[in-house]
Length: 97
Image (cartoon, rainbow, N blue to C red; front, side, top):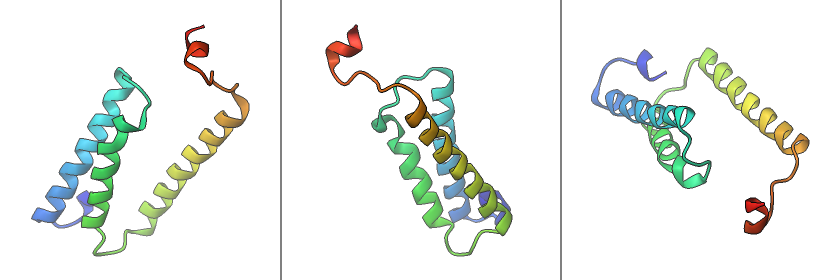
């Protein structure tokens, strides 16, 4: 959506924030340091700031449909994993064993 807008400083800032978020998240696919929330705070914050910067007009329906589909896929797969996979160890000693 960012790239479909006319070029201006707000669009450039939002695009830079989104590229930064995507690059950091993509780096975890190669070498995942951890799944802890703190490693994902910058991508979440930069994406939220970019959304606010681009919120002066409604996104096209196609982009909304793609975003909703991606969100649904993440929620469904996360829920399925939580239901079907065994519970992780709840203690530090259990994680070591």
